[in-house]
Amino acid sequence: MRIELATTPGDPQRPNEDYVSVALPASGLGGALALLDGVTPPPADDGCVHGVPWFTARLGGALLELSGSRRDMTLADCLSLAIERTADKHRSTCDLSHKLTPQATVVLARWDEAWLEYLVLSDSALLLEAPDGTVTPVLDDRIDRLRAAGRTLAPLRNAEDGFFTAAADPQVAARAVTGEVPTDRIRALAALTDGAGRWVEVFGEGDWSRCFTVLRTEGPQGLIDRVRAAERADPAGARFPRGKAHDDAAALFAEL
Image (cartoon, rainbow, N blue to C red; front, side, top):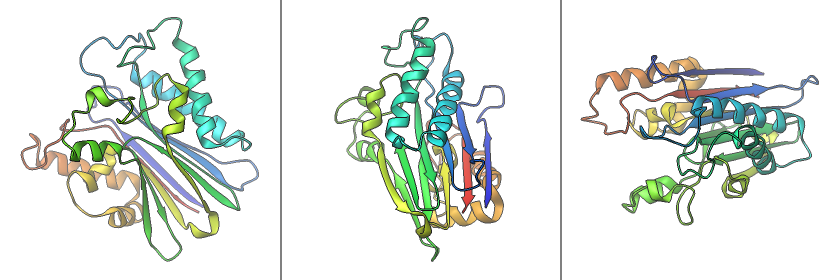
C-alpha cells in the first residue's frame, strides 16, 4: 500500500484551515481517511473564540478516530457524532447558533478487504480509480448547481434548497453524498480540498483523470505546486476569477 498526503496554507502568514489524515489498523487490513476544508468567515464576528483551524483539527481528529474504530457505525453516523462531540467542546464559550460559526467541508473514506465506503459533504472531492484506470469523481454538486442557476450562496448555507457544511448541527450528516463500492473494484483513491481541486475546476489544466495521473506520478505536493504556479501566473484573477488569489490546499493519494 502506498499513501501520500500534503497540505499547505494559501497564505504562509495565516494558519492553514485544511485538515487531512489517514489511519491504518494494527491488523494491516483496511484504513480510513478524513479530509476537511475549513470555511473562512468574512472579517466579522463568527461567535466563536477559537477559530476555524481549531475547529477543523478537532472535528477531523474525531472523524478519523470514529471512522477507524467504529466499524459498526456508518460514515454518516460517524460524522453526526463527531459534529456533536466537537460542538460540546465549545458550546459553553461560543454561540453555535451563529450563521458563521466555524464549519468545514468533509470527505471520508473507509475500506477493508470487502468494501470501500465514502462520504462527501460540500465542495471537496473524492476520486476513485478502478482497476482498468477509469477515474470516477464523487462530488457534492449543490454549490455548482446553485452557481449555475445564478443564486447567491451566502443565504443558502445550511439551508433547505441550498448547500450544507459540517458546523454544529449533527443532522447535517444526513445531507452528505454517501455510498460503497467493493474494494476489489478500486485500485486507488484520492481526496482533495477545493484549493487543490482548482487545478481542474478553476484553471482547467486537465480533467479529474489527468489530475489523478499527476497525483500518482508527482504526489499530492506536486499537484499543489502546480496549483500554486497557476495562481502566481494570474495573481489578480484576471484570467481565472476566484474568491482568493491563493487558497489553502490539501490532497491525499492512496494506492490500495
